[in-house]
Image (cartoon, rainbow, N blue to C red; front, side):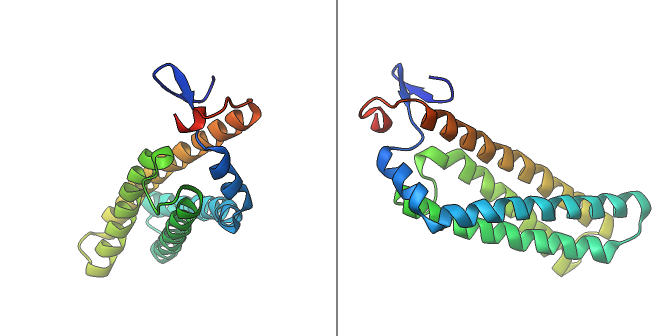
Length: 169
Protein backbone atom coordinates (compact mmCIF):
# COMPACT_ATOMS: atom_id res chain seq x y z
CA UNK A 1 0.00 0.00 0.00
CA UNK A 2 1.30 3.45 -0.85
CA UNK A 3 2.52 5.37 2.15
CA UNK A 4 2.66 2.49 4.59
CA UNK A 5 5.74 0.91 6.05
CA UNK A 6 6.34 -2.73 5.26
CA UNK A 7 7.30 -5.51 7.60
CA UNK A 8 7.66 -9.03 6.26
CA UNK A 9 5.75 -8.05 3.12
CA UNK A 10 2.70 -6.76 4.99
CA UNK A 11 1.77 -3.09 5.30
CA UNK A 12 2.10 -1.61 8.78
CA UNK A 13 -0.32 1.19 9.48
CA UNK A 14 0.69 4.32 11.32
CA UNK A 15 -2.26 4.02 13.72
CA UNK A 16 -4.30 1.12 14.96
CA UNK A 17 -8.05 1.71 14.96
CA UNK A 18 -7.91 2.40 18.71
CA UNK A 19 -5.04 4.86 18.33
CA UNK A 20 -6.83 6.61 15.48
CA UNK A 21 -9.94 6.96 17.65
CA UNK A 22 -7.86 8.39 20.53
CA UNK A 23 -6.11 10.75 18.10
CA UNK A 24 -9.39 11.93 16.58
CA UNK A 25 -11.04 12.48 19.98
CA UNK A 26 -8.14 14.18 21.74
CA UNK A 27 -8.05 17.90 22.46
CA UNK A 28 -4.27 17.58 22.06
CA UNK A 29 -4.74 16.86 18.36
CA UNK A 30 -6.54 20.19 18.01
CA UNK A 31 -3.88 21.96 20.08
CA UNK A 32 -1.12 20.53 17.87
CA UNK A 33 -3.10 21.50 14.78
CA UNK A 34 -3.33 25.10 16.00
CA UNK A 35 0.22 25.44 17.35
CA UNK A 36 2.01 23.99 14.33
CA UNK A 37 0.94 26.62 11.78
CA UNK A 38 1.39 29.44 14.31
CA UNK A 39 4.91 28.20 15.01
CA UNK A 40 5.55 28.09 11.26
CA UNK A 41 4.40 31.71 10.87
CA UNK A 42 6.63 32.75 13.78
CA UNK A 43 9.48 30.89 12.06
CA UNK A 44 8.91 32.73 8.76
CA UNK A 45 8.91 36.15 10.44
CA UNK A 46 11.97 35.26 12.49
CA UNK A 47 13.78 33.86 9.47
CA UNK A 48 13.21 37.12 7.62
CA UNK A 49 14.52 39.12 10.59
CA UNK A 50 17.59 36.90 10.97
CA UNK A 51 18.41 37.11 7.27
CA UNK A 52 17.86 40.87 7.35
CA UNK A 53 20.36 41.15 10.19
CA UNK A 54 22.92 38.97 8.41
CA UNK A 55 22.58 40.94 5.17
CA UNK A 56 22.34 44.48 6.55
CA UNK A 57 23.64 44.32 10.12
CA UNK A 58 20.42 46.02 11.23
CA UNK A 59 17.72 44.70 13.53
CA UNK A 60 19.70 42.54 15.93
CA UNK A 61 17.24 43.10 18.79
CA UNK A 62 14.19 42.26 16.66
CA UNK A 63 15.88 39.12 15.31
CA UNK A 64 16.91 38.05 18.80
CA UNK A 65 13.42 38.53 20.24
CA UNK A 66 11.92 36.62 17.31
CA UNK A 67 14.30 33.69 17.86
CA UNK A 68 13.37 33.58 21.54
CA UNK A 69 9.66 33.62 20.65
CA UNK A 70 10.25 30.83 18.13
CA UNK A 71 12.06 28.84 20.82
CA UNK A 72 9.13 29.23 23.23
CA UNK A 73 6.74 27.98 20.54
CA UNK A 74 9.05 25.05 19.80
CA UNK A 75 9.24 24.01 23.46
CA UNK A 76 5.47 24.42 23.84
CA UNK A 77 4.72 22.27 20.82
CA UNK A 78 7.21 19.66 22.04
CA UNK A 79 5.56 19.41 25.47
CA UNK A 80 2.04 19.32 24.04
CA UNK A 81 3.22 16.85 21.39
CA UNK A 82 4.59 14.56 24.09
CA UNK A 83 1.22 14.70 25.85
CA UNK A 84 -0.51 13.96 22.53
CA UNK A 85 1.80 10.97 22.02
CA UNK A 86 0.96 9.69 25.52
CA UNK A 87 -2.77 9.96 24.83
CA UNK A 88 -2.56 8.31 21.41
CA UNK A 89 0.25 5.77 21.82
CA UNK A 90 0.55 5.31 25.60
CA UNK A 91 4.04 6.82 25.96
CA UNK A 92 5.30 10.38 26.10
CA UNK A 93 7.98 10.12 23.44
CA UNK A 94 9.56 7.72 20.99
CA UNK A 95 6.41 5.80 20.10
CA UNK A 96 7.40 3.55 17.19
CA UNK A 97 5.21 5.47 14.72
CA UNK A 98 7.04 8.75 15.48
CA UNK A 99 10.41 7.54 16.75
CA UNK A 100 12.65 9.26 14.19
CA UNK A 101 10.61 12.45 14.25
CA UNK A 102 11.08 12.59 18.02
CA UNK A 103 14.81 11.87 17.73
CA UNK A 104 15.23 14.69 15.24
CA UNK A 105 13.04 16.96 17.38
CA UNK A 106 15.67 16.69 20.11
CA UNK A 107 18.32 17.92 17.68
CA UNK A 108 16.07 20.86 16.81
CA UNK A 109 15.55 21.64 20.49
CA UNK A 110 19.28 21.28 21.23
CA UNK A 111 20.14 23.80 18.50
CA UNK A 112 17.52 26.27 19.70
CA UNK A 113 18.69 25.93 23.30
CA UNK A 114 22.33 26.26 22.18
CA UNK A 115 21.28 29.61 20.71
CA UNK A 116 19.69 30.64 24.02
CA UNK A 117 22.82 29.55 25.88
CA UNK A 118 25.06 31.47 23.47
CA UNK A 119 22.90 34.56 23.87
CA UNK A 120 22.82 34.25 27.67
CA UNK A 121 26.57 33.71 28.03
CA UNK A 122 27.72 35.93 25.14
CA UNK A 123 29.72 32.92 23.96
CA UNK A 124 29.23 33.89 20.31
CA UNK A 125 29.28 37.13 18.39
CA UNK A 126 25.90 38.45 17.21
CA UNK A 127 26.62 37.21 13.69
CA UNK A 128 27.60 33.76 14.98
CA UNK A 129 24.40 33.67 17.03
CA UNK A 130 22.37 34.32 13.90
CA UNK A 131 24.17 31.57 12.00
CA UNK A 132 23.41 29.21 14.89
CA UNK A 133 19.77 30.28 14.67
CA UNK A 134 19.82 29.48 10.95
CA UNK A 135 21.23 26.02 11.72
CA UNK A 136 18.40 25.51 14.22
CA UNK A 137 15.89 26.71 11.64
CA UNK A 138 17.27 24.36 8.99
CA UNK A 139 16.84 21.44 11.39
CA UNK A 140 13.32 22.70 12.20
CA UNK A 141 12.35 22.70 8.51
CA UNK A 142 13.61 19.13 8.12
CA UNK A 143 11.69 18.06 11.23
CA UNK A 144 8.53 19.82 10.07
CA UNK A 145 8.89 17.95 6.79
CA UNK A 146 9.08 14.66 8.69
CA UNK A 147 5.81 15.44 10.47
CA UNK A 148 4.10 16.62 7.27
CA UNK A 149 5.13 13.35 5.62
CA UNK A 150 3.58 11.39 8.52
CA UNK A 151 0.40 13.46 8.20
CA UNK A 152 0.26 12.56 4.51
CA UNK A 153 0.87 8.87 5.30
CA UNK A 154 -1.90 8.93 7.91
CA UNK A 155 -4.33 10.49 5.43
CA UNK A 156 -3.46 7.95 2.75
CA UNK A 157 -3.89 5.12 5.21
CA UNK A 158 -7.18 6.50 6.51
CA UNK A 159 -8.57 6.49 2.97
CA UNK A 160 -7.49 2.86 2.44
CA UNK A 161 -9.55 0.02 3.81
CA UNK A 162 -7.45 -1.55 6.58
CA UNK A 163 -7.22 -5.29 6.83
CA UNK A 164 -7.89 -6.66 10.31
CA UNK A 165 -4.93 -6.69 12.66
CA UNK A 166 -2.38 -5.46 10.09
CA UNK A 167 -2.08 -2.29 12.12
CA UNK A 168 -0.54 -4.25 14.96
CA UNK A 169 1.64 -6.51 12.82
